[in-house]
Length: 292
Image 1 (cartoon, rainbow, N blue to C red):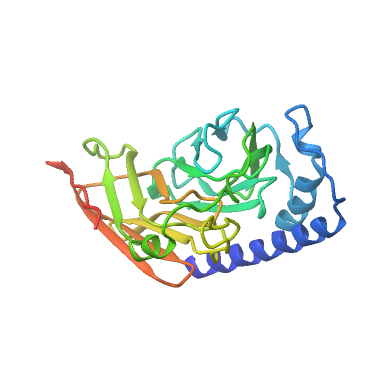
Image 2 (tube, helix red, strand yellow; image 1 turned 90 degrees about the vertical axis):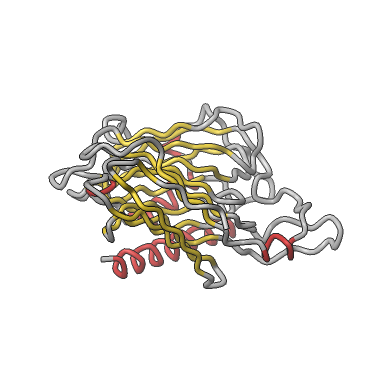
């Protein structure tokens, strides 16, 4: 299932990239900025990569009973925009959200990634921080286990998040990459979704930020996959790109049933892997892995 999902995600990235290239070649030199007054379902850029990604599949634009997206109307920092994707019902074997796609229309690559869930997730909700390059509609598409698609959309005013000048020591940032902190919050209660968090020290470079000292552009280097398991069962898998902010941070849920180990396996674009694990004890409560 993991290999099939990975192949599907690669194919989706290729389809979206192809439509983005075509759209960019047809765009005029001067474009009008996106506006919150625009109809989000009629934005030309979205319609193009929607077709590339979903191939004519019907998307329910009134998906509030399934998924909601929270994002600031105006971001304080375009490079670190907090978002929360909230499922509206718990995960059960009979009905669950299997995948959530994240799109940021006006980013250099609109497809920011996807999050895969299972019944063991307990709740298909995720919080993270993203980069936003220009005023944009941000949208999530939730796919349920019966194959239906539902959307939630927000308009975010922010600019420059992907191309902001790099002002840190890039070599030092890369050398320190890979420290992982994994923790569960609160005391696990059997059968109830438990909130957890994984934090990764990583530059997550976009490849579009100019170093103000060297005047060069550092190559893109970012976390591309975060796989969470509990008791060796998949909980949440994020397949993402540089739209995720520096030092990626994900808050998610898992369903504790007795004692087990919560694990995080992380991969970046240089094929480096980082891991962390924490024991979940239903009697004494969760432990916390140290950032190392």
